[in-house]
Image 1: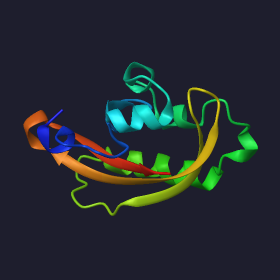
Image 2 (image 1 turned 120 degrees about the horizontal axis):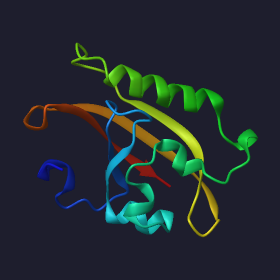
Image 3 (image 1 turned 135 degrees about the vertical axis):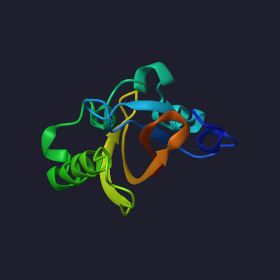
Image 4 (image 1 turned 45 degrees about the horizontal axis):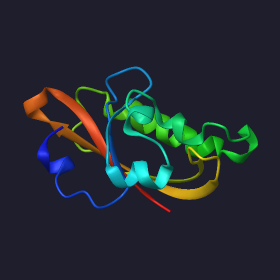
Length: 125
């Protein structure tokens, strides 16, 4: 990933690729892995649903999932240049089974050198 996304990341951050089916993680910070009690390999290639894996469906906000899905789809539109960010409060489950609530902030960015669009996000617990 470009250095702008990965250099000196001291927070739970990640980058997703909205051009691939399921909008998979393509980069995750060490801090996100530590806070989620997961390895990067557990997240890379998985979609945002991975953060809710193991939770009862009634605990996960359907409107929050819809907001994230629609945001991913909007970022994949080739003509989209400026898309506002979206914030969603969702429960998550760590690799060790403990549960918590986090705020996911998603923002779209175009990476011209890679000829693709990704978006970076942060999770706050």
